Image: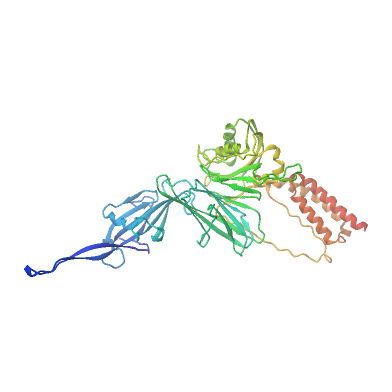
Length: 557
């Protein structure tokens, strides 16, 4: 029999009694028998079982225990006493003959929740060690061997415990700080939360909020990963564990971007949001926009309680809603519309360059609802990860009032290869859309997502300016090439010709314009380009007029 043993051999002590007897007799008092204890070591080892094995069809692990009779430190086949078999499909079996040896050599099996960083479908963590303190519990300090068995052939793993992890910001300057926040399902005071850096060193979270961790990154540009591990106990008293990773980018030019890590994907959000826990039958997080100033001038800004724009980021499966992103979106909105009293009307729909579907809906309620109550309904109809699932209830703020008209913007992405649907949405009362238009567009029209293991590639470019006193001036246009900016791209294209004509007609005096003045107008142009989309086209025309005025002014002088 060819057997490959693991390198770790675990030793326990068993006591066997040997009866020693001597010769003697009669009334003169012979030698009495005296029991002498001789120690015998118990050994334990593991054997991997391949798929197709008679004991585990999908493969698994056999834990074998026995006594080291010949005291050579190795467990020979003749020394086997008992064994435990743990299969990838979740089944287990213990050889009853000699099974009392496992009172000394302990085997602990914890369930691994779904979407774990090691096992997407969940599985089991098999730990083995010696009960040195004889408390019948395999303490962490006693564990000598760990084996991960991912679920194969059966769906027995519990649902995910960690719904998401958010990094704010996701791109950090060297030696900068970021805050990691986890959304954990039904977190209990007895649950064990552990944060680790990429060197597997334990980090210290906030004492009052262990699901939140503030970290300082290193000085070198690149990526750094952090791992969250949680251990809890389910209703059956079984240990359930899960780990999830998040990757932070370190760059010389950091960006105020948040990353929300879901099951298999991560979604990047623009600056301007805070996130909150969303638990239950859902994988995702609620997003709240930071209050914006009202359209009319006011001396103060609304307080954080006066949230006007909400939404969510979530990942689930198609659940028979369709086979394309458009079909899934249509089915989801139909379910939402049927659950409210009122009308839901689509006002626009766009197929983004990556195939995602973005749509805007006007919601007119016959009976008014508070913003948070409407979000509750939307989440339970669109974002939950199982048919009939329910997410945790969100409580409206004291400042909310019942309204009838809202706008919903939503982006749906579907990957049929892994049946993964990622949804990003914003919800706001209709008369406040203008105040948040930029944030809405950058959240839903420009939905950015990637694999949860993807890394942001950050590139820093360096430019050296020429001596403008002796060189001609160049114009540099920086253009956003994303799909939602197509109108602005066309406007720039249309205005290129009149700008070229302007340049050609003024070419003889162009070199007379001081470089600082050109720079100032270019900066003004850039500022105008970043202004709201509704003003971009007219602003571009104004830029041409302004440049022309500069040339005329210089010529007159």
